[in-house]
Image (cartoon, rainbow, N blue to C red):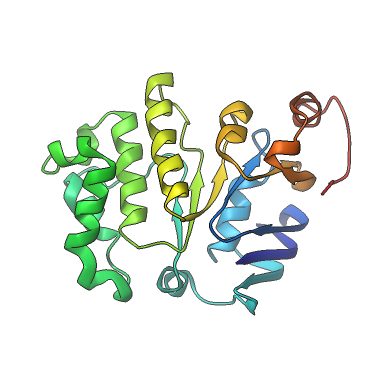
Length: 238
């Protein structure tokens, strides 16, 4: 569904990604792991058109050169690292912002009920200011806002960051449910164990390069950690 070929991207004169090539198959969960500074978030920002890039990004076989707001209309939706909720707006107001794309405005009420079904705690707090929520609840708002956009491809950046283990377990149970419903998911995650537990495909990045690409079931966790921690250097394997 979504393919990246020879992608380079960065910030000003600083290049971060070096010839990244990978794919995100329809209906499957693709995990991208790697240490801080590997270029994982930069990859997502390039996919969303938030930073300049070179190379090719293709959606359904067609070159993707649209503006960020047009990508939302195409069904490419990102849940950013660090939640980024609007603190002075209520939970429901934050969620409703996800229904902004024209193609899903008429389905706002239906999608809101779906989000409340996924995250019952948000229904209990729908009038509460987002700035007063716990970190786990704010992560649920960010994910729910993404689901309001009826994503064909959902990019989720570090959903476990800063959360207690019990909340991480709850968040990933929702990710598993979305996967079971056929949502195509690209997931950035530093916790390799939990990433492998939900993924169909795993890509390891370090220093802006792709060092390993495999089906999750074939990943050797010890070698993955050696590459992750730079105890071993290696080229991508498929």
